[in-house]
Length: 366
Image 1 (cartoon, one colour):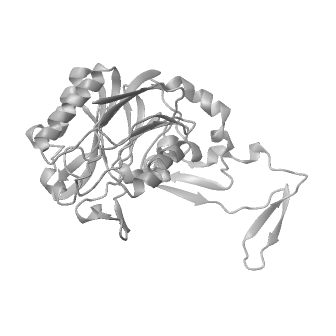
Image 2 (cartoon, rainbow, N blue to C red):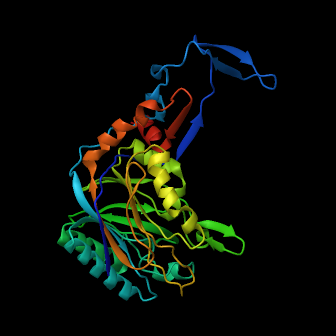
Image 3 (tube, rainbow, N blue to C red):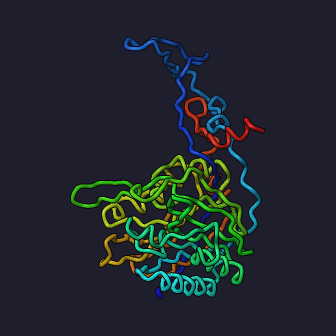
């Protein structure tokens, strides 16, 4: 098993709930400019006098998020090691579970307090396999041997496990589901993939998860012994509104188990991770974990499990072979990064809003 170690010299903070809306606000005049009517529209447009610039106090950053952002919680820990376990996956489910157990134990021996597994690690990644390998997570025990193993190890090793994802059976529906177990071995959260991977690039890649899977309906943020974590699965990373919700709910870290392929992986995998936290101004850590590449499988994963820091820097990564990527997260550097680039106080609440519908609706009912 290849071991990769890297020290993190930076860290982050973000947050969560149901689907957001990015809403643009029309510009209206104030006493710093004048109003005129566009010849093709009756919409008022504001122009700014060069002698009277808009000051920061007029930006209304507190109104850029609705409801307002939640302050991040007190960090339960400042520094800890994270392990990204880039597992090889076979058609033998029992072998996959036993192998994952061995790798998690090895990561814990190396000092990892948080372990992240890949997307669909107990099954081949195919629509034909999802129904066959699916487990009833809520029933637990023999009905879900994959999660039973994760719960047992989380408790016995006293670590937090972000359990990648497995096919989940719930009634007559199948989901792509990530389970989070804290150090007590209890199931802390269950994230069902919100954005299903349906793409068709002629001659390169065609896959439609919606043929067998149902989309989840709820963003997932969870408080653990290693901080507040927002969860997404693979294709979820492409939708920056989800990351924006997690940031606005005070997450310290975003975790995305994923299985990008040989077409989209080289183009977008690292780019999306770095953009999620820096270009979109969320300034937190992002950890991703892929299956190892198997060139003989029907779906070939890109690999390259990665940890990205709050300045958008790659802190630790690997290639495509099976590996354990171990690195250190240091939450104490979050405030420093946000002081350097104070994005939070520079948002233009007078021009646009992120509306967290789930939080907003919850507020109305209480």
